[in-house]
Length: 155
Image (cartoon, rainbow, N blue to C red; front, side, top):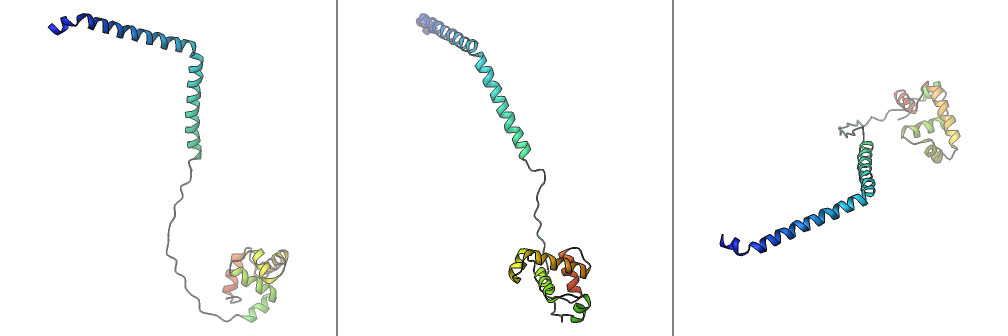
């Protein structure tokens, strides 16, 4: 208690200085807010739109399809080498070049790659492919290869 009485004036002076300092800071903040309220308003809108843009971009970029990789064991049977059925080739009327194209198709080469291996044009490969499809009565390369293997035309 004696300590409070001894420093009473100093404490009152300190409290009044602190109150005056708080009042000045409030007036300064009030002055800044009122003079620059348009700037604060524009800044707040800019921050809101920036946050909204980032959120929307993350929503739009998120993939809607989930990709899953499934590993399966595949057993490959090595087929026994069969004799090519020459009678079936003659019956279907396949030429030597069409057989070459069909064999290269079976290895999975594209038209351009087949043309490069046989030293012929891509359009010639397409013509041979069309003839093969008609003669084997199929619509796709995979069907042609499958049917040719079934008929023992290719290995």
